[in-house]
Amino acid sequence: MPDSFAVEVKNLSFAYGKDPALKNVSLKIRSGERFGIIGPSGAGKSTLLLHLNGILSGDGEVKIDGLPVTKKSLPEIRRKVGLVFQNPDDQLFNPTVEEDVAFGPLNLGLSRKEAGTRVRETLKQMNLEGFEAKASHHLSYGEQKRVALATVLAMQPEVVAFDEPFSNLDPAMVKHLIEIIESLDATVILVSQQILPVMASCHRLAILKDGQVIRVGTPAELAADRGLLKECGLDVGFFCSICKKLDL
Amino acid sequence: MKHDYLDKYSSLDSVLHNLDPRTKIVCFFSAVIVIVSEPREETTAFLFYYLILIALLLASHIPVPFFLKRCLIASPFILMAALMLPVSFLLGGKSASGNLNIGVFVFSLSILLKAYAAIILLVLLTSTDRFHRLLKGMRRMHLPNILTMMSALMYRYIFIINDERLKTNRARDSRSPGRFQSGRIKVYGNQTAKIFLRSWKRAQTVYQSMLSRGFKGDFPEFFRLQFKLSDGVFAVIMIVCFGVVRVFI
Ligand SMILES: Nc1ncnc2c1ncn2[C@@H]1O[C@H](COP(=O)(O)OP(=O)(O)O)[C@@H](O)[C@H]1O
Ligand SMILES: [Mg+2]
Image (tube, rainbow over all chains, first blue to last red; front, top):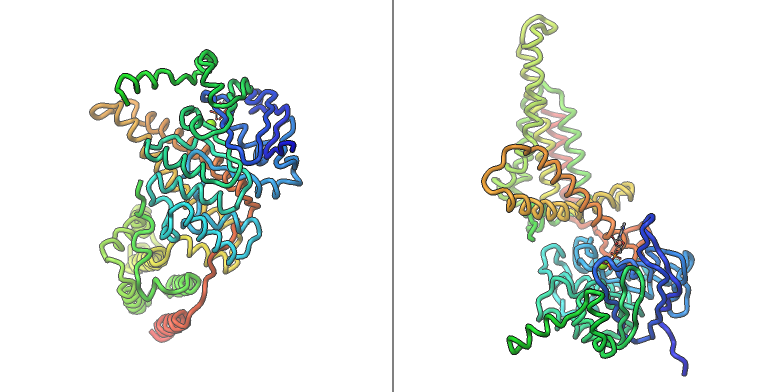
């Protein structure tokens, strides 16, 4: 059986004004796969994510589940692809948690009742029962992160893409988030400059540098190429040596 | 970071808090119009208006010191406006009748009383309901969507801007041991510019996150507001009280 692709990117280029941020990027991500995109800061990772549901559009082709991202297909595309932004503050703009979670489903045209059901289900899934009427700016950072994820999951997307999900999290929260990510019933894209948690949870990874994909492979394949990781500023040998030294 | 200075006391349980925001908006704004249009010689009428306002304040269960502090914020402007008149008469030296008469003071006093009455009602309105419910009320009253949407976003951005301000404050203070004097204005200028640039960038990201959740320019409504019997009762009481003072006193 041929693979079906959740995301296909073909020869995608994009520039902010004159500065190219993406150069001829091509990627294929299988349905149900957890796919990591790693690269140093400024590599164009966030820019690439914003192309997946048509917030930015550059030269080239992006297909979600076989459907090309065009102006006409935008509503369908945005239902299929959920973006979880790096900073939960950017994602939570409604007065209460439940209104924030309901925002997406209501935009999809669901009735208030259906949206209410989605809110309850998703908050339960994220272990956030009882948070419905709270204001999100009164929550802790970890709780905000989970609410931000809930706002996306409530739309039941087929592809969930995370931008720097592990930034600002303590180690226990990183572990918890990986567990949540691994339990998702969707194609997952993780974009991060923190290579270890991505390697731990993804089936395959791509390395992005200066707007170009320079390598795609399994975590084991990439880990074997220390030279390449070093060259991209992604080598974690330093941390491993600390762990060894402290016998962690 | 905790920000409850705006919504403080807005979720108490009182007669006023439990009213529909639309009832309060209409009643309070009508009351402002009634008070402001009262002829300025009717000093007894103002006494009665203030008695009604005090009754409303007591019914709201809001702590009086908090309430007064809020009213105080607007005071400089009002005092200035009220003082302008006698001062300009004194400086100009000549009024219509050639000397400073009691009428000018009555006029200033009535400006003061009217302005404070308006402020008291506004503070009562904003501290007896959560901001987003007031906005929802405004929207249900068919105020332009763009207006309520902008207010909603502004309310959201106040917190973002305040966060950025605290962050840049910390960065500034940690690098200026002791009091810094020279170039102070320039430092504040730079800081302000930075706060706005950062806030602008974040506003853009917030908008992108809204788009990615299917936003098409209309805020969907999750809650419905509902009039209750108490709304009708409150409106009737307000009409009777203000009507009696306006017409008979
Ligand atoms: N809104 C923007 N305007 C102009 N340039 C931008 C903007 N956003 C990102 N860039 C630039 O595009 C490049 C890629 O940025 P980004 O996709 O955010 O990288 P990453 O997420 O990998 O850190 C960087 O050089 C960055 O400075
Ligand atoms: Mg980024």
